[in-house]
Length: 453
Image (cartoon, rainbow, N blue to C red; front, side, top):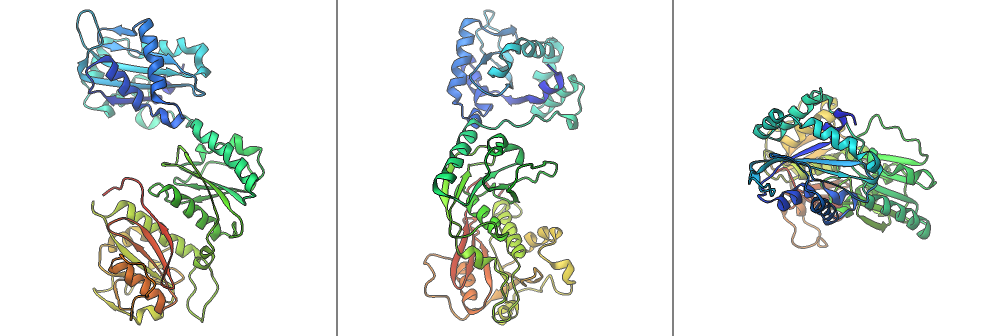
């Protein structure tokens, strides 16, 4: 067993439990077995059976509980440090301060002795264990372990992520659903391309749409008819992960509104746990249409998608540890400005068009900062930001607008009635991103995860 690989795989937690049973339970929970579709109680039962047969106490301050489970993975290691000590049932009454939990899958069942020997060798010196016990925090322990293996923190060996069993099962079922209902595509919302079950998809010839939260530049896709979209969906609900993926695919003409799409999503991008069957909304095409209407400036699909992305980021991150609400008005800018008044000096006035285009990634932080100003951003269809802090004065709100909406949403809906623009709002109270057109709500993304504010 390579010591660098072993040390890189160790997860470190602080233990507050006082008894052996409670400490082992905490270590099992820290290993996130739900990601593998394995109940933590199953792992706990296997460890308790092994402990009942022979207690795995290595020395007076160090215990190494371990067990085999029916799992396709190789191994997981969790190190728990307890400053006050854990009552491990030592005859002398001394408390154990370092507990290393090792769980081994059937893949390594024949070579588990090497793994145990490597862990024992790593922690055999009492002086080193004392340093770990007295370390300032988990990060300090991690640095000590890496140094013991001859590695610097930036040299940590990256282990290929295992794909949870539930994800594998759902993707297999989803492929069958695509064929059964005659769907036009299979959509997977994942964190990284490395988390896609490629072996299952390799033998299937249908269209695959992948919506990722992290861009994987070095990952080469060999499968045909596979399309990748990078989008900030980590903070969205399961349903809206699907909706965002459908919108992104529709923007490239990969979907029609006649046939359904089978979508597989989850609470996070690593473990998929839900299947839905839906049809792309017909208004997606209208939102992203480049067809000119009565001579007004055309909203480019890339501009619309970029504004949506920034809006989702604002909803998730807030600003200065506080939630932020804002509004973007895009398209038909000349007519929009006839219904507007500048509340503050326009921060975009006087800059060249190249420096204030929403498609420029370097402008994102500026947009987020100016989102704190009351009023709306007015943006041309080509992405040029005309103003921020703009007060909109539409003649009246549409009668069909649903009740209970605040002033920002009322104004956004109204301006889309009196002009040919689209309006995107971020709710300060809920973080919901809403798109209005012709006075109607045509798209909505709801925040579901913990925010930074």
